[in-house]
Length: 128
Ligand code: FES
Image (cartoon, rainbow, N blue to C red; front, side, top):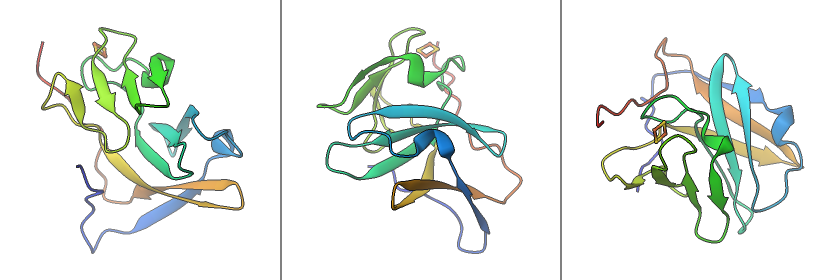
């Protein structure tokens, strides 16, 4: 399982995401947060997760893909790569992992933690 991996000395900017306000359990939504494309998942168990919103393959918007809230699998609309949206790991193909952001929710208000490290928070896959 992919953990949120941010160095301890990196500041996190918590940014409210209006698009994710009160989304239903089992839904996903995409949003631009501080200039970064993010997909936010509200799982059926009530937890949230946030990942890079563009496919590691060819930067297609993942939220436009086929989403199965029961299995937590999202298939990219580009070429049907599949991702486990509990952890961001690639299912098919394996070895491609989505960047995972920190996320918190309080009274329906969702905030995503953007690391202030000057990096692009986007994992690119070099598989064809
Ligand atoms: S762009 Fe997502 S699988 Fe190709």
